[in-house]
Length: 274
Ligand code: PAF
Image 1 (cartoon, rainbow, N blue to C red):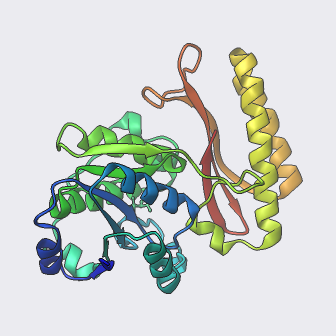
Image 2 (cartoon, rainbow, N blue to C red; image 1 turned 60 degrees about the vertical axis):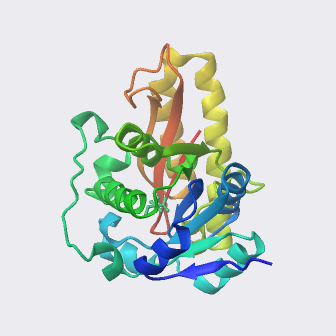
């Protein structure tokens, strides 16, 4: 029986994967949950080998406290990865990854600087930088990412689908039974917060169906629900916006669109889209 291989050094990574041409890659920052499990299972179906990375990437955090508090659950993560029979787990140190000290070469267009890019300065530049480094190190055939982080997925596709032959797969958001999108950050919430998050999701699902019936009223409906959510659940909403999926612009009338939200419950920042 083949065992899961734990890799910490780039030299060992090169040795381990050099004979494989069809690697499916699932980048993570650990704190694994059923959303990650679904990405990994999809990778296992499509690829000959699956490689999962666990790396809390300091460059993509615009706030040091957020970086420090990010959930770290390595023992549990490894248990999950073994259960799923992942082939390779790559857990590099910061030094291994950023040895060359080169600065990120990725600049967002002005039109990209909406939603999370507007509120988390440097975040996506950090994400693009690390994904670029991983693609160079691993040359994966596929990368699997969740739709919960829609703007991340959108930008990774935009920047890398032409640059590399790697194909980016988007995978459906996995939700708990109260409709809360699974996220590592949910580990930072208590039960009441999680319940609140559930109510908020359910209201946004309802909002989407109302907007579907009358797109002209989107702005009005969003304003109304925003007020309600703030009053009822004592949350801070960073943004709540409808945007189209073609260019993330605000024109949704004849286009596919989603409702995007970022909000704080008890200092924990959550994002979702519907
Ligand atoms: O979505 C995440 O967990 C991270 O942004 C990613 C893609 C692993 C890059 O660090």
